[in-house]
Length: 456
Image (tube, rainbow, N blue to C red):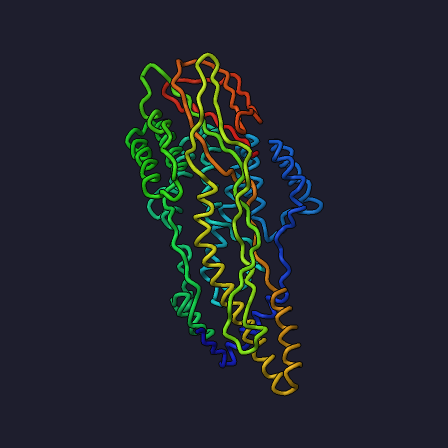
């Protein structure tokens, strides 16, 4: 049983304020129709064309509002990366990272009632998976610009002690900035709600993708010991996060550590498919109110939905040297779903508190009208209040749209020289896309890393 104590005038006023603010919410999630032209360009791997669509639209009919600046920088930064515009991509991703950090800093300084406001009235703060993978792609940006140390700085932001992966679970240990109380204590003190929905823990603490890239970058920097540690961390990621890495460690991980002195290794990384997107889900909850109309509430919550990729196999063909399949290194979609667990628990808790506060006011009003004017008047009051309250809520389904779904790796040891490489993307037994790379220079004592992407 949940006990509601909203007797203090201060608390009642706060309850009313939250209700009024919620009633004024108009979802600022961008309509999916506004992405249609952009999605078509991305689906055809016309990344420069997609960038032009974003730039043009922001000057006329913006796809991304001011409150969605992080989404803008993430989407544009990723598309710039796929297009090979490394410097522009770095600039966008760094802006996104800065805004994510500012949003987090702001959130921990706000009071309890600001904390539980509907997320749609706030600036989009970014998701944990976005904050993780932007560093991976920015590391690749630095590598492609010839800055190995810059690439390692980006990887260390994830892998170092107290880095982003280490801090992942702690980001949602919310405490009041004024009293130091945890969420449950604050909820009981401010609202009288004595029971909260159960939360789930997260089972992701290491990224094989980040570790593998870190190992290659350390090799390129001549730091063999650090490279060995990072390669070992790839194995550890598979062993400690089996819910994510439920497939074999790629042979390419071992092969990259054992290259004959007289040969050079060509490493290939490919990103395929599109990451999950959020959709609105309606979940019914029973609430302990007197009026029957108000005893069941519809919670509108975001849920991640996987996008189906046509790509089932990726093959690399190196002129005069052979062909081989790339192996799955990281199911990025699974990582995204797992890291969203904490965020979802946080959203559910806030939605629960907010809904209770709004419904208690409606329940008190309906019961009072019924007492004074009769059951029918009370019923009409409850129905009107329920309709208005349900309309005041909407799930925050904002997120970046153009992260890949999977990362594959492979490689081959070659005599130093210049090669032509073809990347074939298969759907079943049929090649559905092909990428040609001519004049690929492969040398000893350097990192030869070829990157490909197809988001079909």
